[in-house]
Amino acid sequence: MEGFFQALSSYSFLQYALMAGVLASIASGIAGTFVVVKRISLISGGIAHCILGGMGIAYYLGFDPAQGAVVSALIAALIIGLVSLKAGQHEDTVIGALWAVGMALGIVFIARTPGYNVDLMTFLFGNILLVSPEDLRLMALLDGLILLATALLYKQFLAVAFDEEHARLRGMPVELLYLLLLMLIALTIVVLIKVVGLVLVIALLILPPAIAGRFANSLFQMMAAAVGMGMLFNAAGLVVSYHLDLPTGATIVLIAGMAYLLAPVGQRFLKKAPALAGRG
Image (cartoon, rainbow, N blue to C red):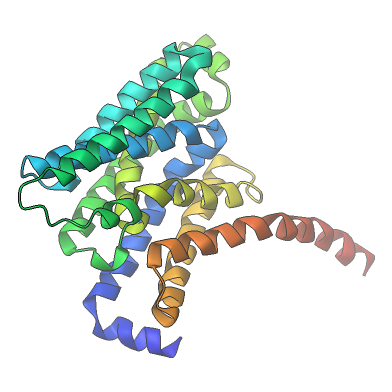
């Protein structure tokens, strides 16, 4: 542990990685809470894997793949959102098809790029240790947009997440709010790509909020706890991967996964603790 902190004070790439983990946790804690409450992990997965198509096209045309990720994320959110609203019982089939086509499109365009020298594994599995100051600025900007949108539309998102019919009766534009919520999630996925890549992005999006949901009494508490847990998992993943020479993104997800499996035990313990204290 001491060796990690010595390295942290000496190497800027570790400092950038730690900051990226913090920024990613803010986005995933907020948007991921809506994903878990609304039970739209399949839709979120479809958005995530469609993004690779936009990144591949951007790289092929000579643009920054991050720019392609933002644009394609928003477009994918709109398309998949409309599909989920209109497709009914065939929703999962259509989303699965878009998921596969988006991935294939990205791989084809990246492979056909002249002078191809990009590491496809970085897109798929991420590398938080390669985060640059420019990446951090983009992540901070997207975090700001996510925080602003959530603050302005918190009550509306809350209503849509828990009771769409009641929201409709109150005259809320439910479909529009749903699409805006998916766009919020899409921006979060872009933030997370640098940390864990497209393959593992859904795990980091849903695991901290899923754990937080077991202990929180309100949506706001769930968001705050998910943000805190995300920061803890990212920091722990950095430390463990540094000492054991493991892939950082996968290590972060494994730690989050173990915490998710242990969460029911902790929940039972917390329920029993007041009773034991009363007996004492």
